[in-house]
Amino acid sequence: MRSVLTISVGLLFGLALSSVAHANDHKILGVIAMPRNETNDLALKIPVCRIVKRIQLTADHGDIELSGASVYFKTARSASQSLNVPSSIKEGQTTGWININSDNDNKRCVSKITFSGHTVNSSDMARLKVIGDD
Image (cartoon, rainbow, N blue to C red; front, side):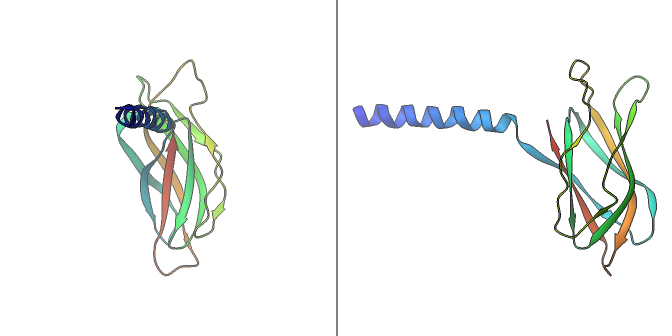
């Protein structure tokens, strides 16, 4: 009887910890294929509007040069914010966290993130992975 109680308590404790860890989970918001020529209209649309406090960017399959990024919020007047992104990301490299939506009292959900940039040093199109943290 005691072992059944110990196992039950252990399972409940494990479930409680996993739900706490899930609350601050980092989610892949999407992946963008970066063309070889400079392009300024690469959009990552977020199908389910979600509050995102910060993002990280990772380069896969090639190096990426970025010339800008903006985040768009779902509001009555389509508010947007320019992001301070690094000018280049090497293959396999992940940036530090880039803060967005910093006004905690006025939480706005993100509807899309746009990028300007292109692939460098690769015959294939590099992929830009966008990771979000709520």
